[in-house]
Image (cartoon, rainbow, N blue to C red; front, side, top):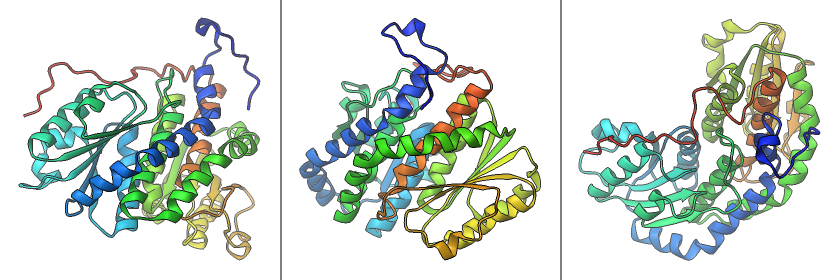
Length: 371
């Protein structure tokens, strides 16, 4: 962790100090998130038992929408039942193409503030259509909390900065925990608990390596992830844009060859959120980037075989997740390196990532219609 000094007076904080503190305090918020799932498990079990036949819709705005993409993939994998994610605005204005006429899904609404106008309007519309609402947030006593049939509110995860870091990871863990309850997957639940216990050591271990990656300098970043990691790749790109005003885009791993690879030069960083079951194929994409002169960073699952990783390009920086975990339980470990990349890039460019340009803590649109 860098040597920024925090005082009790917010005005004396150096630019980005809130963001730095929030990134490096994630261990506490991760533990709060899995604890929240555990104490609410009887209610989650009851709710799923009553609504097993409904498809699941994850609905949100911004970062939580990307969380929903990963959560929907996890839900399909663990339960074998249909699930999708959609931005709240799509539910509002393109309801039939998202939800399907006559369908009332089980809705998981995710929001840091619980006050975003689009999400509240979408939830009201879904309730009118007969949906049941599970809310996941870090804000107690929010409007979303009051609209929900069941709300999981995570303590110790709120933020002063605009860009979501520890709140995102905490809501990701809580959402994945709720998905694991739906799938009756005890190994994933136990894995999420273990992940929270090891978060602090992981953050401390990867800090210097991420700083070294940023110190090389880059102009544009591509985030690659497939399966449940694709939503996280989207979130990594969003963080890089919000916090450091750096061009960034997400892609599925092998899709990077189909056009985007033409953008690679020596000022390009490609970050790979590598899966355990496709290590060799995904690292080959990063190897090709390195051969083209680009910079690469691989976030590897624990237990990836040396046979699969030994052929990584010499320019590829690598960090390995600390624990051998079920695939879904390992997802939160991909986020801290992405948070640090964006934070240290903002520091390198002299930007205050606590207050990103043109952005607010949440969007309030008082005249938004919900018909």
